[in-house]
Image (cartoon, rainbow, N blue to C red; front, top):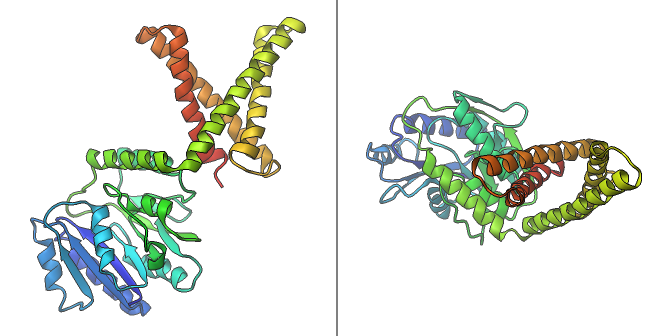
Length: 355
């Protein structure tokens, strides 16, 4: 078997037959020897039974019936356990992922151009149809946090394929829907390729996404952060560089104001620029291990903008903690610096020093 696509289902009776017809039509036209594994979480609407009834029409369907609603990620893992294909794939059951894109994801792996292909909504040519502002904002925020760990533009999509050997002996155990990020972090692959797709919001049935899934997602993010020694090392290096920059800032401020008689506001501006420049050089070469001359002007501007944003965040929380929560201003400043440090680190890791 060339390709095994796992489709987790829960109450998808209106979509499952249509989707399977699309997938097997693509298999036939593209000459892909493929199977589809339906993993049904005991759907009350009879989705699992409908899938079983389609086996006669599509002999390479496998159906796993689970006892209850156990979650998408665990369904994918369970489906892959019985997969016969050399390439493993995942699709949603709600017709949001375009089946006609299957060959574009499969062929680069078959042709050894990539180990891992991802149907991306967030690269050139990709788009989303039918989402409101809240759904778009939620996705962007989730993607922003995922970019701490990967340079993939759409690490939260549910449409991707990977060589089976890349996840063998890998302990996958994510909570909720977002299994792709877990594989991006833990999988043994060398090259990824993102393929633009048009994601179309479901027109039949109800979305399974909700606050519970968002909580699971951020629990996953927290667990990855705890286990990722490289990111923890970068954070502490970044904080240490910030401490050095603070001393540089104060020293230059004092020298310009007290020794050269420059107006203290002007001194503060000069000292901030010099300290930010020092921080940029140290973080580029030490924290994030980049060559100094690599896109230096562009990255310096990005770093400076992130630093200004962190400064604004610092001032906002200093004011809020002191004026509204009545916290002593020095304690407020310590808390505000901690929040601004996190914003500063994330902004620079995700944007400035993202490969």
